[in-house]
Image (cartoon, rainbow, N blue to C red; front, side, top):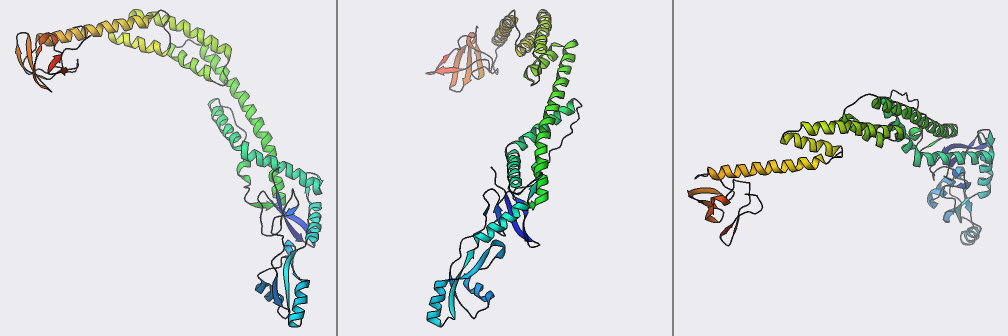
Length: 381
């Protein structure tokens, strides 16, 4: 049970609990309502000597102690000190200490507790009811309220999307802070209101969830009831499958609808594809949809490979056919061309390379090992 503390004060000759707090205070007379024990230092103070001729205010000043009737602490002359003082100074010097009057405290607290009321109860039953409900509020504030408030805000955002009015605004989280104390009636009202809010926030969350679910399913049904593009169906199906209010029946219907639309579009796109751009567009599109029932993607990838290979070979042939001094090859600048040989300024100096082994710049890797040119392999030309 979470502790609760009350301030014990004497009002109009009767003791009352005048303030309540979740935090203990050592000043004034704050009492733990669960244990009924004081929260101030109630032990006896150190003994000190003083002159009987001194004024009471001076005695406490010199002894570094203070009487505190509010905390039931009083200065008391020690018997042993009186005897010693009598023997040594003809009774002019004695010793004393600050003592806590347990009996007076207990009587005062029970009087105050008896007068406390809460929700039709009084005395200890009222205290126990207040302790119990205050504990619920503290647990709610610490562990659940912020999360619940976040949920309400999330639900509010969703509600706006579907024009659903939100009729709840949590206030308990900031209404009373535990490091402060409050008048009893204010604190009791806070605890009661907060517990009502716990119920209200649950009811409102449930209401919003019901309305949002109905609105989402209605929207899903409307979307799949009208002809839409394959792209829109793909986005719709993704959102349907991942939505917390997904309807399995609608999801299955959307999957079948997607497959139907996809197959029609799939055949049409494949037949109309006639260029490298068309092939790459088809592959990107149906890879994204994860849809390739007839392995058209593989066929087009083979076509792309052949097209790019033929383009590469054609470019290399054209480069070799027109090779002349000043051209840039894959190994460097061509400085001389003789029949079937080209002299190239490489990073390793001048080298003769067969023209049928030379490539345009950046289309092959130049490798010279032990001062001998090594022609690339696997390039098809």
